[in-house]
Length: 358
Image (cartoon, rainbow, N blue to C red; front, side):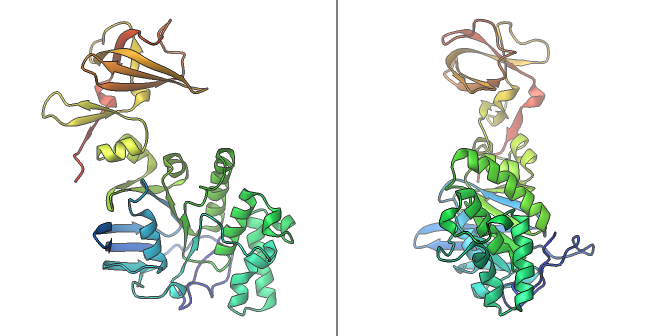
């Protein structure tokens, strides 16, 4: 089942839930942000953000606390107003429109379910508020409960559900009126690690099944890398880079992006004084010096961290530069221990030049 929103004057909330694939004709971006800026006193929360998110895309905003992620969601949802810039939703300029007239819904970290209502009535709240016919309400709610796999729990109250089940109720309630985009503000942050991993799979399955644009805000890089079609890294209110997870991990533009997306060795360029990125999994440890076409540094092991499937080796070069290598253990030199001296070797093609952040 795919949900298809129809442009409406009421928050995308008067559309039905027809089955079928996405439209084959060209359509405007689900969300388009143009030079979006927001300041709170002297604090610049967002500075000239330009971003376009396609219809049906799973998109993530990734960055540390205070980088402008949640501010961006609040501006899109209409809970805050920009100091400068425009917000287009489905090709319409809705910068000045109130929240209830925008075709988006927001899912909060704490779910915000009505504790006195059943699962069914929580999900039915939206279509009932539009005074839809009872048959249409039943159809919409029934379809969404099937999508989130909670049809058998329709009569339970929120306190009778697990955290993951409550999250799926919140998703169903936000999707039942077929918004053009679903905004998710750290939706998995309150769950324990094992449940977070299983809910990632559920989020991806639900998004693919309904076909609606998902915009996820998170500071969890594993979450963003595993879920997103594309993602954007924000830092200090500014957009650092946009691309696919693979593009940003392998070819980050700056040290900010490189280090936020994973462990990173930042090596000084031999000419020009710039930096190159070398991911830890590309670093090879051995007793022999680098061979033809390789680069290498002599280093001492500072720490060995067993991580189950991998071993993280933390090293320090003769010039006190920290290095990290990640290995399955099979390729590590024999008798490796803290204090061991060895060569850290790599293929120059495996390193990537970085630009300086603005």
